[in-house]
Length: 238
Length: 238
DNA sequence: CGCCATCTTGATGATCCTCAAAGGGTGTGG
DNA sequence: CCACACCCTTTGAGGATCATCAAGATGGCG
Image 1 (spheres, rainbow over the protein chains, first blue to last red):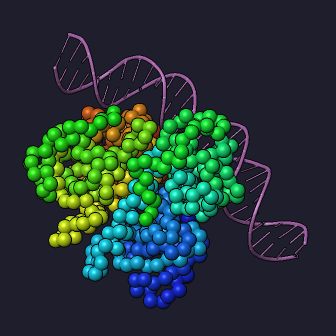
Image 2 (image 1 turned 135 degrees about the horizontal axis):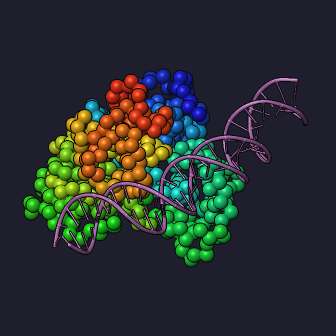
Image 3 (image 1 turned 30 degrees about the vertical axis):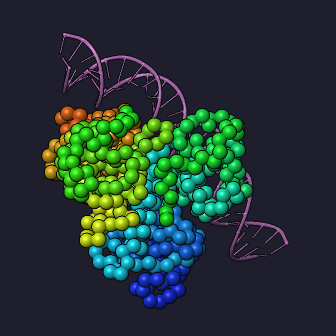
C-alpha cells in the first residue's frame, strides 16, 4: 500500500531536470514527488492520470485529487503537502517554479491559472467529503469523473477501488458494495470493474444531492432530464 | 439553521462600498456574502471569527473554515463557492477585487499571499475530514484551533457545537459526547462549554494522528513532550 | 420568573468497518 | 499450452461507531 519512493524520476526522458517545459514519463505506480519534497515545480498532465495523496502518520492516506490530461498539480509552496503518483502510465510537462517566493517575471497569468486550478481541485475534494453517506459520495464522484469523458458512453475509471476508497474516506469493500448496488438499481452498468456506463444521470444526481428518495430498489421513473449539478460544480482539476 | 441572507451588509460602516480597504462590521450570525454571489472582493478579519459554509441541496452544510484576526477569506473566482458568516461580532477589511480576471496592476504580492492562504485553509479542511473517527477529528480540530491562541491557557472556542459538527462532518451529539470523554480522560477541561483548556497535548496529538493507544480510560502516562504536528500543519487560515 | 436556545446525556438503530473467504484476470514458469 | 501464483475485486457475517430519537440540564434574555 504505502509505496515508498526511490526510483522517483526513472521515467524522465529529458535530462535537463531544471528546465521548465521538460517532458517526463512515469510508469503506473511511480511517484512524481513525495510529500515533504521541496516544491520546486508544478506539472501538467499530458497523458494518463495522476493522484495526489496526503499520508497520515497511522499509515492511511487521503487522496486529494485525480488529475487528467490538461490538469495541473503540484502547486504547493515550500514543500509539497501531498505526494503525487502515477495512477496509469503518464506523460507530464514540468511547468515552472513553485509559487510564493520568486516567480517568472514574464507571465503571471499561467501562475494564476494554475493556482485557481489547485483551489478548484481542493474545493472539489471538500465537496465530496462533505457528503454523508457512501452512496452520496460515490454518486457525486462518478458524476464528477464522468464529466471528464465523452458523455453517454462507457468510460474507463483509471483508478483502483482502493484509490476511490481513499479519496472518499471509505473502504474498498464499501465502494465495491455500493457500486454493485448502483448496478442493481440500474443507475450504472459495469462492463469490467473499470468500465463504467452511467445509465441514469438524474437519479445519480438526486443521490449525490442527498435527496434520498432514491431508496427505491429499482430504477427510478422520474421524468428528469440530465440535471447537471447547479451552482457549484467546481470542475475537478482544470 | 439555514440562515437566509437578506440584511447582508447591515453592518457596513463606510458607505463607499466599492473602495478596497473599507472597514465593515457584522453582528453575530450575519452573512458577509452568500454562496453564489459575484465574488468581487475578499476580506481580512480584523476582529472576531468568520466561518465559510458550503451548502448542500439537502439542507446540510459543510463549514470549510474558521477565520480569525489576520486571516483572509473570500478568494473565489467568478462567484463565491461558499457563503461567509459572522461567528461572533466581526470587523473586516475589504481587501480587493476577486482574482482571476483583472487584478490590481500594482501589487501582485498581496494577491499571492491571499491565494496561498486560501489553499492552506482548504488543505487544512481536507486534512481534518481525512481522519476517520470522531475522536481523531475532534482532537485534530482542537489542536489546530488552540494554535491560534496563547499556549497553555484556556481559550474561547468562538463557534457553537453545531459549527464544529458541520466542520468535522459529525453531529452535535457526537461532538458533545466526544468532548465529554476528553474531559473524562483528562485530555482537556471545559470551564464553560466554550472555554477549553488543553491539559495533555501529547495524548491529544496521538489521538489526532490515529495512534489509538489512547484507548486507556484514564490519563496517558506517556513521557512525550508537546509534539506539535510535524510536517503538514497547514496553519488554518493565514 | 419563565421562555428559548444551546448543550449534555441516554437508548436505539442504521451505516459502515473489520474479519473472512471466494471469484476473476493477468503474468510467469513449467 | 496449461498450471499456478498474485493481485484486485466482490460478497458475506459480525461488530463498532456514529446518527437518530428523545429527554433533561444549563444559561441568557425578555
